[in-house]
Image (cartoon, rainbow, N blue to C red; front, side, top):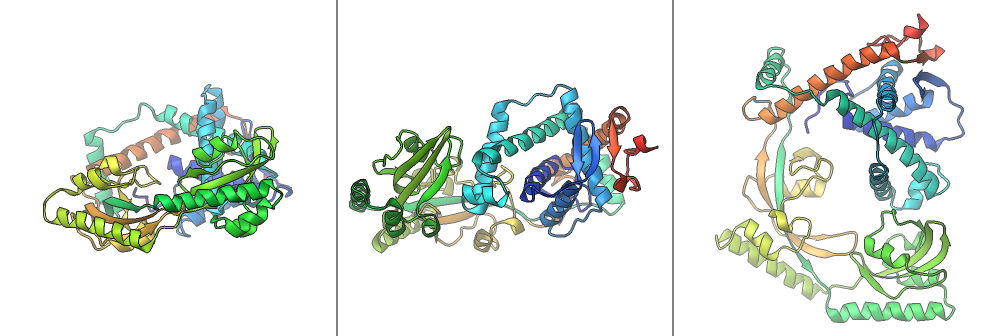
Length: 459
């Protein structure tokens, strides 16, 4: 989505993401004695919150957006005001909503740091339970803020005339937004599968290892020698504590939670390959687990065969024997895109469009020069789980960088006009609520010049 080139942080999702990141970041130095910058209702903002927020804003904007301490504090006070009145207004947040957010957050941090243990260590927590409790607290506050904003703006809408007036206002000020180049792409995927003989070889090898460990051999040593897990050299196959909510693949958790202490599983398959798992200890909701992962080898002959298959399909598409969408439905082996004509969804927005310059570099290089309807070259790809495949991409839609046009970009202009009207509604709400809310500024911030009358208690 297009972002305003201003210093405002009124975008709801941005604020919530920053609040989430900054509160977690504050855990990295838990022994620091903090000063209280402000009290809003029953909520407080610490000096360190301001520092972490500023740093996060600069990082996310790549240094293009900078805030003073006073500006940052005002942004934070508004969030705390929303959180306070969400409670006053009896806004409810279900445990299921909180749990869902926590699960997604743990998955995100695990992916960012490479493992759950590294994420826990990076944020200074003792274990997964402490980490989870803090995530739950932050997630609940984020949801309260989001729902209070939605409550305040639930009746806000814009008419076509308001959209036109908004657009012309920007045009008169020579301030029309520039929309970045956007693309919509689809993919056709053929996977290279290991032979049944190779899969049986891996299963037999894991069974042999299981027997040797049960006879007294070291599971850790066997993992270091045999496992295909990238980090096995550092971990020895130990995955640490796992709960049913941990971001591990479903099939893996299903096996782990059937084991007794000291038991080694039979070989089992996931999208990552074949595993055996050793349950070291049961600790409440947690299972302390190690595993060995082995991925069946795929021969060059099978890879060449798969490449030839996809090239034949592409030839049929170019010869007009079937459309790209028909080819996807008939041949593609990617379960996430097979039923949508191959359409790739942007994981950050949930939409089918991508800003061209914000695409992953490898994907950008393959499609940046394509015109609408053109196919990329066939290329090899491999997942973190070891799956090997060949792909081809098609440019479904393409819009180049351009200044906003009311007709062509009506939906986007309408969204911007609606966003502005919602911001104005929230600003008015803030003015009204400041007057009836307890606010106490710390001495270090009483000289700040705020947009709103936050200093009312100090007059």
